[in-house]
Image (tube, one colour):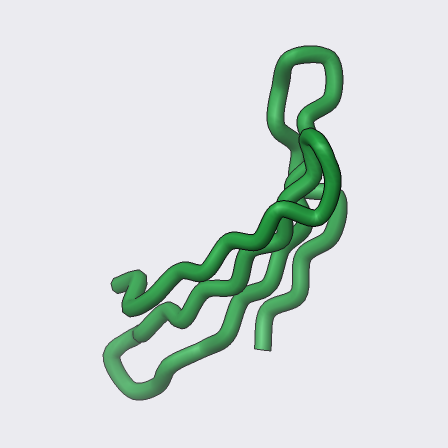
Length: 49
C-alpha cells in the first residue's frame, strides 16, 4: 500500500519522486527520477530501501 508520495520538479520535463510503501511486516522508501522523453515518461533512476 502506498502511504505517501512527494514529487519535485527538477527541470522542465524532469521530476523526482519519493514514496513510502508498506507491506505486511514493514515499510520501505522508494525514490525515482522520471524524465519525459519523446512523449513518454521513463524512470531513469530508481532506489528501493
